[in-house]
Amino acid sequence: MVSVDLVAQQVINGLLFGGQLAMMAIGLTLIWGVARVLNFSHGAMFMVGGFVGFFTLGATGSAIVAVVAAVLVVFVLGYLTEVGLVRPLRDREEFGIPSMVVTLGLAFLLENGFIVWIGSQRESFPQFTDVVWNVGGIVLSAQRVFIFGVSLVALGILFYVISRTKLGLAIRAVSQDNDTALLMGVRPNRIYAMTFGISAALAGLAGVLLAPIFAVYPSVGWYPFLLSFVVVMVGGLGSVRGTLLSAIGLAIVRSISMIWVSSEMAMVILFGIMIIVLVVYPDGIGGYLE
Image 1 (cartoon, rainbow, N blue to C red):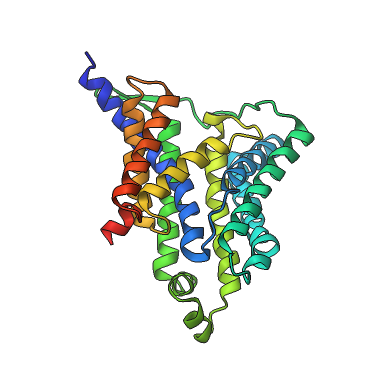
Image 2: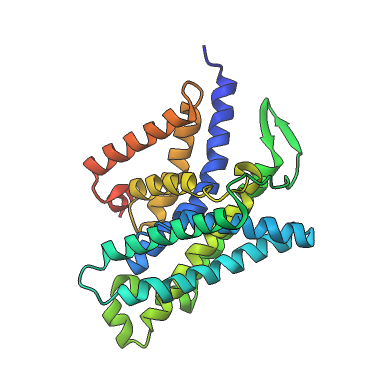
């Protein structure tokens, strides 16, 4: 018999993990919503963020500097990815498939480049804190709460930028009608590059924040990428609100299911949910909500 305390513990764990997952998944859906690119290098951006944080922390000893460096470096990487690899394909009649292939190639290039450079071994990332709280029988790791809090702040800043700033207005204009936005003086190419940079920065931030949990190694990004892929498919490609709800919901389902099954089987369950949702709602729950 499973105790109520254990289920409550897993719900809290799922909620905390959902906030972390949303940070990664919303970056993925943002690129699709604005630039219509399914970015298969998103997991590699996560990996690069972890490594930049790892090396910066080793050089400076400051976790804050490591986080800032990871965000900035991966922002630039994402910006250059759009300018150098995706933009030259944009005038093609079939833009979607070539852009997916290019970003998939970039993912393998980055992963194997790091393997050649430093090897495939796992590098341990120091814990931000080892404090643990016990609240009414629920065990809370201060580190996971901290990561969850940073995720909420990052997503809050993102929502503010999109909804209240000129850059956000331009992003929304380009996502809705590229040609009309151009007539209004918005430069779509600049917005595409900025969106890629912002999305990559979110992946880089997730990479460095989750490094103490996942460790750091060249193929570390594939698992969070697959989770993010399921989340955005269930939430609806391009729907930020649907992706947020999907991330929280699926993370709780994953966490509760792991009471009875392995993490691999929990992943199978998530893919099963994705298939069912896409059969019933082809545009995901975001399309249904809107």
